[in-house]
Length: 365
Image (cartoon, rainbow, N blue to C red):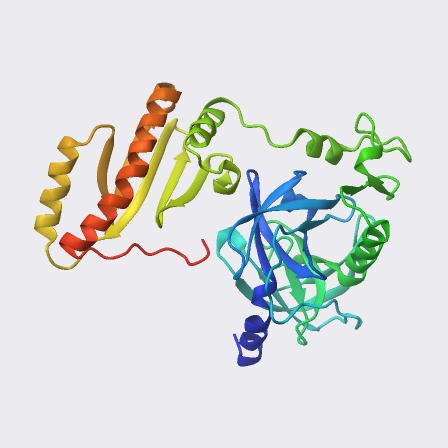
């Protein structure tokens, strides 16, 4: 990455947003106080988890959902600090223009790729897109495509699978038109009909049909029903709620949760093989006192009930492991409460007694 590109990334990175919900994750960016992303990134839900360099993970509200152009607008519960606001480019995009894509592919935060515009206007269905060759992947969706003046020329929207860097971005002029139409309504809870393309106020929708043309509005149904966990997932979330954990904020996917207690990170994952693992990465093994540390962990393991220490590479974990068929609300609540209580205490003890090292985490993971 050249110096000019690095400087551009530094200027714009505070405006880049990470977006997650139970169904997946993606990217977004700030324009005129709103978070812009793709409709498919918010998955038809009214809420999404958002975070930036300056905003901790928060619950954003999806106030506009437009499956026709694959756009969505999110309102942040708090103002997001960003020194260099992004602006929409008013210059025409030309074949061969240099472009930069910024986003969170596969959860790798603030990844940047460079390329050129392969085709300034490529029709896909009824919508025109900018075709470009900067490498993007799942998780880049909803992020900005920038020109060499750090202006937004498009919204990264989709790729052609198994192709060599074939990316497509919704042009800035289509985004501006949607923004202008939305702002003219001076209200929220707006969706666009995929058939007649009219903007529809949700309170006017009956039985999930468009009041203008009568088309079934799938997005209206998804927004009305929301996310409803079931089975073991619902049980895990019920247990977390009983332990006063904000379940919505802690969700990473339908089967994964993460939160912090006294600066100690707790991860819970429910795997396809039926195993539920709740664990905390306490510390890393020091280069000295290793034998004494191992003896201590073995002794503690013999005394712990339902919890156990383990080591993966050089990181020490305290874990609760259970098969889904054996998980009950009573025992699950008891075991997780014990993990929540013990993890911060053991983390402090291991660092002070054995000079164990702090675990390493991605800063914005």
